[in-house]
Image (tube, rainbow, N blue to C red; front, side):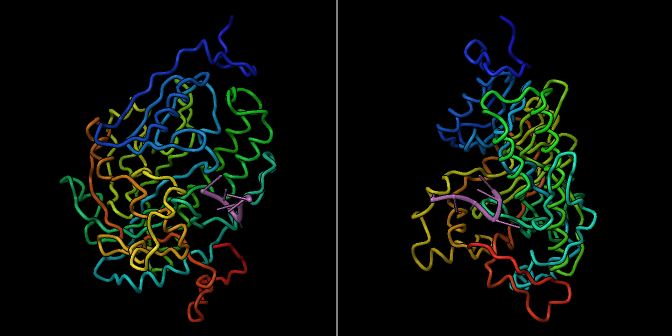
Length: 406
DNA sequence: ATGTTC
C-alpha cells in the first residue's frame, strides 16, 4: 500500500495514518471548551496533517476550531472558511489625543462607510479566474466580530515600546476580511468539489485553483483594511499610517508544507502584531519572538469567544440599563452599533480575557507584550437611518442607495 | 464569516 499523502485519490488513509502532534500554547488558566479540543483532535487526524498548534483563544468553529495553526501536505479550504484573508491591522492617526472629543468623533465616524473611495485601480474582473472582484464592499467592516476601533495607549509595558507607540496619539485597529468575495470563493469551492473532507492535493487543478483565489482574497482583505483606515482618517480629518497588518485566516506555503492559520495571527517577518481585546478587556500590541517558529509563526488573534452567538441571546440586553451597557466599556469608551442583536452577540461576556491570552503566549515564549491599548470608539454597524450623510457633509461623501437588513 | 438565512 502506498502512502496516500499528496495524492488526490478520493479515499485517504485516515485510519492508518497516525494523528499529527498537537501542541497547546496555553496554560490551565485559560478555559478551553471541550468541543474545541475534540475538533482539534479531528484536525490532527486529517490526511497529510503534520503538526497542529493551538492557542489560548481556541474555541469551536463550524469546520474546525478557531485559534490554531495546522501544517499539512494537503490543502484544506474548509479550515480557512469563507472569510479568507481576514486579519487585524493597526494604524496610527496623525492626531493628538488632546484634540479628541469622544462624542464629536463618534458623530463624524457614523458616516464612515459612505465616504467616497477611489477604487479605479482595483480591477473589476479577473478573467483567468472568472471572478468578479467586489468593489462595492471594499472599505466596509461587515458583521460578526468585525470592527474598527479608535484606541489609545493604556500602558507601555517595555521601555523600547515608546519607540513604536506614542501615548499622546490615537490609533485605529481594523478587524475585517474579504467580505462577499471570500464567501463567493468558498461557496464556489464547495460547489465544484464532491467533498472537502480529504482536502486538495496542492498540485491538483482544484487545489491550485483554490490557492489562486485564496491569494486574491488575502490581497483584497488587506486592501479592505487599508480602505477602512483611509475612510476613518477622512472622517476625522486627519492622516493615518500603517503600523502592522497581521492576517489570521489564510494558508501560507512553506518548505515543510502548507500552514493553515485559522484565527491565528501569521506573524512571520512582523516586528509587531496587534491582539484584539473585547468590550471588557484591553487589546495588546506584542512582539512575536523567534520561538514562534515552533508554533508555525502563529500567535493568538484575539480574546477568543467564550459563548457562541446563539448562546448570548437572553444572557443580556433585556433591561434598559443592560442595553445601554452593551455600548459602553470600562475605560469610558463607546461602541457604535445600531444592531442590537449584534451588540448582544458581541457583548463583554461573550469573550475570554485577552490579558490571560497574552500571559499564556508570553509564558510559552512566543511573544513579548509591548503595550496595552484601551478602546475609545468601537465602530461596528450603523443602521439605514444613519447611513444618509448629513447635508453639510455631502462634500466628501456619497449618498448610498443600498439597503441592508438590520 | 456572508448586503447572510431556517
